[in-house]
Image (tube, helix red, strand yellow):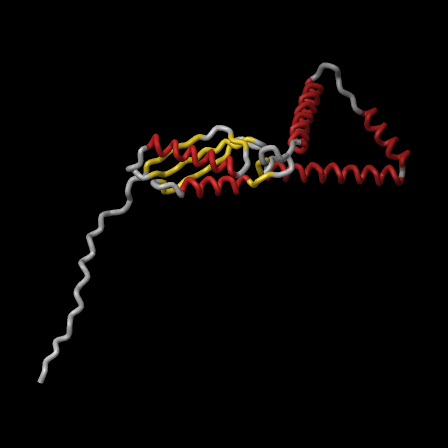
Length: 196
């Protein structure tokens, strides 16, 4: 997208400079510009069937296709940064807010160590993909169903229309090494009192 913006700026700048030069020239000497352009066009000679004609035709078609592609990219609607609330065309919620909310709800479940959430779809339908890291002792089908349900509930609470929920679980091995037990707390020594 950055490259397209750079090309767009260059092309628009060149076109504007050419138009400015032509308009100033037409304003100063309209007859001179018309005569110059007519003279240029009279000098162009291209045979009907020649290599020069094929090169000019191919180059013109490639340039036209490139410019049509740039025009299509320019006129295309920009992607929305949010998701439209169900039934409310004028209200939307940021996609990142939805991701954070689903992640916090899933990570709050017991046995879940972390989660990554991505949203597919756009506009009015949300299709979340939740990739969760779970403890090795959890029952995988049960935990997957639980994460699916929490995700559905969260999307519903946000007032969004739910598409398909996908859940992927990764079992994380225990990384804690067994550490030796700390020694029992020592009894405070009682001072010996000697009488005398």
